[in-house]
Amino acid sequence: MGGPRPHGLPRVDELGVRWLLGTPATGLDPAGRQVHLGNGGIIDYDRLLIATGTRARPWFNRDEAALDGVFVLRTRDDAAGLRHRLADRPGRVLVIGGGFTGSEVASACRDRDLAVTLVERGPTPWSAPWAA
Image 1 (tube, rainbow, N blue to C red):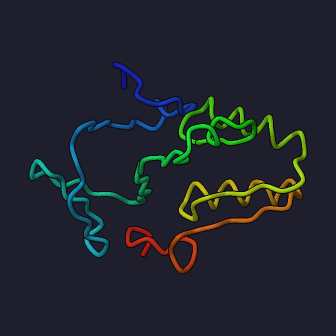
Image 2 (cartoon, rainbow, N blue to C red):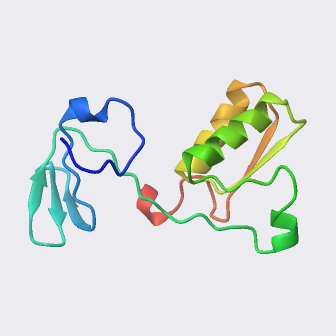
């Protein structure tokens, strides 16, 4: 659809995507299959993916965060670095955060037959209010 590409997704132009950057979604009507927007608009949908865009929480101790093998995963480059390190077959991987991204990283580790521990501050993975 022309214009700037705010993503790195392959073949997305073939989908006829319309970007509404800066327009918050304020409500969801699953029965009516509609997303309500902060500007008063409504968008109908046939399929819906909710990508929350939550912020990464860097490790609180800068010296520890700078250690080799500590990753914050937010960008394509971050993912490439992590993929490279996983190819080195670490003895164990610790994933902090049991939301979508953390669960996907843990799953990718298990797909590579790597031992992984997932820690989450809530009672279970995906227990944050937005995951319900």
